Amino acid sequence: KIMFVLFIYGRMISLHRKLLTFVSGDHDMTAPHISTEKWIESLKVPIKSDWRPWFVENQIGGYTMQYAQGDYELTYATVKGGGHTNPEYRPKESFVMFDRWIHQSAL
Image (cartoon, rainbow, N blue to C red; front, side, top):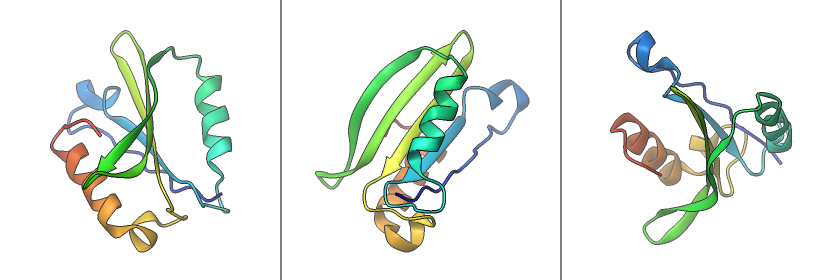
């Protein structure tokens, strides 16, 4: 599986911890999603919202999970069928995911 990791930081330092996001394509052979998941587990941040699908036009766009501790929040998301460069493999899903992030909407 291939993963695209996107580190997104908020527009201000105070928002930095709330807006850190990791994105993986589930077909990424360069950076497997399993490695990212193990790294996130090593942070020992409690799960806020367990695995669930996110949708684009009533189709599964991928899966997401949220972690939180105090003011720190981390969102991990996969893009179904995505590769190492998600916008190349899944442009619609990648755009929707980015658009929701930039407008602070849930996946």
